[in-house]
Length: 373
Image (cartoon, rainbow, N blue to C red; front, top):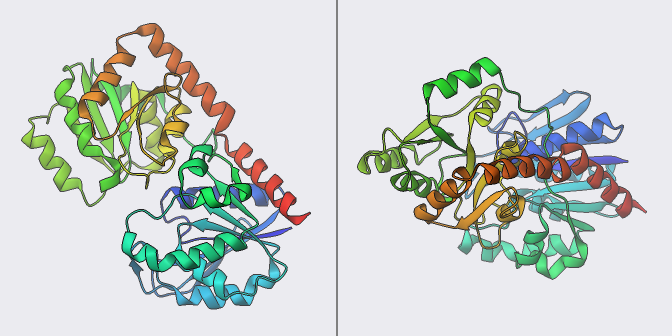
């Protein structure tokens, strides 16, 4: 069994899809399944390298436009190498990978689509792209969705429910570690404060402005820490200043991977305040759950975010764009010690039961074997 993972980028490029591609590829190769990667580079240079005995082919790109890496070389490269593989595992959304698939000779090949999210932002371009996307979905042997909820609520997946398999994203339970001294330093820095931690790129769909404004409805017992970099840093900082929240909300900037575990460990509650279904899953939620931290998330129409965080079990889900509702959820969890401890235990158990990397890959291997029968 030889597998090709096909997607937009691959680590060290960061992002949720890249992380999933990496985890699948690494674990497959550690389980004697040959798996290589075809993706685009970040510049106009072709690069081929071996990582832990598997091949990563990065095709040269003219740049990223409308969230799509424009790499014509990917089309020619896939046509050239496709005969070497039994299954092409395509990570979406990625119109370029879809186009490469369209021009390749698919005879005798099995196609698995990994549907991380619908295309949300580029609505007008989507109308032009939809016929190509429909062709790909008809060609697919199986479509992986990251939650059962996404299958039910995506207007695209609904048409192909018979092909869909819900396989939640899983992470390595040892991926993030904490250092007791560093955790204590964070707690000491924000002494006598309950830390509400959030993490993500500072972009529109993350809803950080509503998390910031929730601080207006919280006592001084709380501090909100937001980790991440992005284009909305200046805007979010302006919101903090205009609302006089400099002592209650801190933008931490990018947190290095080796430090992330310390912030999760030091946190009282984790919050994912996303507002649009571009946030289809929210890997940061399961990272927080791995530390046994209660979650406050939002009910985003069409997204799996509020499936990952089970309401009244691992935390609380509230309506989007509602600072008061976020603050109320923080207080609800914090003011009842028994409830807080219950959510801590349930969050950890939910992580162990549903979101382990080895289980994700085992389910994918099972799917591979099913389509090859």
